[in-house]
Image 1 (cartoon, protein in one colour):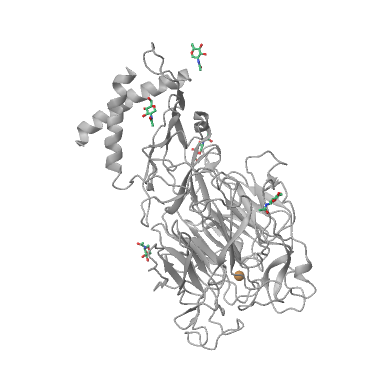
Image 2 (cartoon, helix red, strand yellow):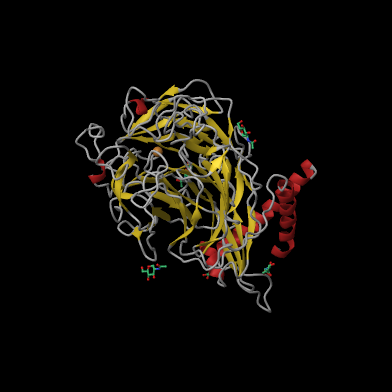
Length: 638
Ligand SMILES: *[C@@H]1O[C@H](CO)[C@@H](O)[C@H](O)[C@H]1NC(C)=O
Ligand SMILES: *[C@@H]1O[C@H](CO)[C@@H](O)[C@H](O)[C@H]1NC(C)=O
Ligand SMILES: *[C@@H]1O[C@H](CO)[C@@H](O)[C@H](O)[C@H]1NC(C)=O
Ligand SMILES: *[C@@H]1O[C@H](CO)[C@@H](O)[C@H](O)[C@H]1NC(C)=O
Ligand SMILES: *[C@@H]1O[C@H](CO)[C@@H](O)[C@H](O)[C@H]1NC(C)=O
Ligand SMILES: [Cu+2]
């Protein structure tokens, strides 16, 4: 029976997939890393950047984009110092780009159609970072006022793209946070008008707005009441469609559709926003946690609101916090203490690896983000005691065992204020920046210079033979038909049992700046499998994204297949329609029950599955499906 009816189902599946293929074409299988023999568990310098990596994002699988503040970078463009650039990973070539206005401490995110925006910044400056007399450009740096700028970049692989200024302007925002929403538009929150170490009432902009614009800025009570540490408010779109906002000690849920804030508990132990700058991340959204968001906050500084501007407060002598806390804001208003960091740290970057672990790097043990001319500053730095040693956090390990340093080696380059880091498609981590200085500052006696040296970190899996899955799609929908991915014996490391723990994950690497990776998100797709013992090959049956764009907003992302903890090379796909606007959600297809088919016996009739139940369910599901497909075929005349 099975033998008779499976081909019908398969034929229908083929027709269905070929119809879908217009939008969701099949990707050619990813290959192996271009870098071979990488020193596992270590940082390796790969060159010097053209501008300092204050802001950083992966635009295509091959291109990483830098955005800096205006300063005297020796690299020139249009007759003045550049403050943006592109790094081509394959060729290791770079080019200067034109960010047009002063992007100092701007925010960034990607729209649902694949265009990145970079919003806000500082006024135009002259050498030394002082405000320029002419805010329309000209002068040494030729940098018009960037506080209201919305800069757009559609990444490219041909070296021909550059920043464009949107004709729309935002409200004045220095240190705004951006987050992409369910319709692929972006919310822009907070910031100040003139800059400084912390915010103050005279220049606060405690409001939010959208791009594309939806009218005037909307006041935000939580930003209004959290001075002075309310810059770069920590913000995540939750699967509920609400936004979590963490600012100074306060936490709220913002229902941005109805402009309503609900208070949650204050965050314990430490301030996590800039300039206390904890490491933060949304933990993986998985079928196992039913796509429930938990946010992790690690480190920061327990500075009290009245202390930030106190003349007796010598910032770089004040120890950072070791505290890690978790919040599951759609389910609970209360934080839960998590395993403490191996040592106190501010300005850590927390990076989601495809294997589900969180790589933690950069930052310092003393002080905070920020810089100034104070005689107690280290040069200009408000932080000291760089932490060169990374750490790995396992969200699924039992309490008390989540942090580890097994197999990790230290960097030699301090990554202080204005450092950044991001996951790359090949699974390595790109690390750059560090510049706690008002202008380009280098020299033998500069403790924390304007840093151009750029490194890659190679996680344990880097040199393993990578899975080369066949059948991944170039675009994912919210719900809709599942698809099949084939893994051969090599992809399964020669052991069919490895299919049981294989996963497919979609990662948005986000926009890295100020120890945040705005928009960074890890979503594991629903999967099932059919393994064939006789030839050690398997099919992963892969569900589309959950039928809820708040789980992963539309736009570009990387897709990985992970076998035995080893990820395939990530491939750039489009999540959702690839256009701005309400996204279609479709019914979720049932996946066949997992099974490993034992070799056919000479005398036997048909294959045996190990799991009696799954065999039965697969059979009846196939029957029903075949009949349904025939009916659809008749009605719609494929
Ligand atoms: C994406 O949308 C923005 C806003 O409408 C637009 O400026 C940009 O050109 C679009 N990008 C693409 C690739 O269509
Ligand atoms: C999983 O989440 C969905 C959507 O929020 C909800 O409807 C469902 O009841 C949840 N399932 C479980 C087992 O918690
Ligand atoms: C990394 O550290 C280990 C000890 O933890 C050491 O044995 C190894 O030589 C180091 N590797 C490099 C490349 O420094
Ligand atoms: C492995 O065996 C299964 C079951 O006979 C078959 O469907 C599949 O095509 C085979 N795969 C390869 C790569 O030979
Ligand atoms: C399959 O069913 C038989 C008979 O009911 C039972 O003895 C056997 O243990 C079952 N096998 C599995 C893998 O569940
Ligand atoms: Cu900054």
